[in-house]
Length: 266
Length: 266
View (spheres, rainbow over the protein chains, first blue to last red):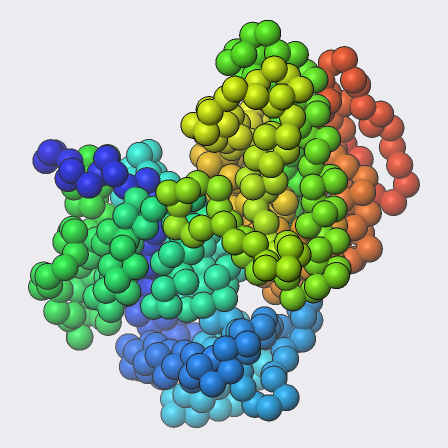
């Protein structure tokens, strides 16, 4: 056990990015798709589904830029759910749940994988795989250690229901579920990072974002949060090992959550 | 163990009122006030502080009624916090955290108890007693049983930070922290009850509100949620035993969370 980093005394809340940082979206989706549809290349399916996420979010955000008042709630996929889907009459998109974006991308890519025939129930079930992602092997044990000393919360663009279902299934011991859905803004919007500080009535420097993505960490840093990079070299699968070499600017650079707990003296 | 209520199969989420239902605000505040200021009548102090809550909330809500666009975020108490307190220029009040309402009531009642001399740090500390409330003796064990079968979430007018700090201290094993702060509406606004169903992409009838207050349960019932009343006869202390006799309309009426777990087959 090393000496705890001097920051450990100043930080009160650790906010965690989820997809790729806490859970293995690529492996989980590859495995489930391959089990359901053995002829499909699960690795490619997972990567292409995830690749659609950034442009989909960019479209939502650009709608906001054109009309900043458009962030009203737009939900939800399930036709039996409480609230029907809504669109702005002028085509500008309001607030949109990740479940909805994931589903739109899924509908778009299914034909490319010979799965255009899937019916509504099959598509709904497959889309919910994002609620059933497996944690990285060190996540539960590392979070359990970190929780002893810090308040641990999610800070994800995933919606609250998704994050709650995921945590319940994977045993992730969050103190709190914070999401873009709470702030009606997606990361890297400053409203999300500053929102964590506001919720807990803290200074930004008393909050640390933990993530496996440098752009997310840069967004947090610009708001005055502390940052910890976590190496997840297999985020995109064994065939596409990610560069996890150290980059300047983060307060911590750690191999996994056990190493993070060591560094923070937990 | 009795046969589980037939509703148990249909319900997926249990949403809990907090103050009085899960935690003993009267006993906790009485004890802390009396320990800090032995000359003060802790029982009266706790009851009068809590009595200020309904009128304070009514003033906030009436501001909304006059100007429904006034629900922007107004926070926060801590002068060192991330966001300074804001007021609408015309005096209409926007969204207000319970921490702020509790503090305003506290400032108002301190002189009546001979405590007008408390300084800012003492007032801030005392106001945070709402983050340090003790659970009723059956709460943790009952919630732990209920969590095995259901998703358990808070649904409180308390703010997210308050509910998270309270849960961490008292060991309340929530799957999710939902608050008026998420929906920018206070109970009994339908947006709160329907918000739980929306977050989890469920029908209202798949959600059950658990509360020790009939007005809260009536609000949920009007939105199509299921309801369970829990007897908390000592909510206002031993000297002011509450009538907990059964009233019509609720799906369940139980003595405590262990009895609720029995009734729901957990």
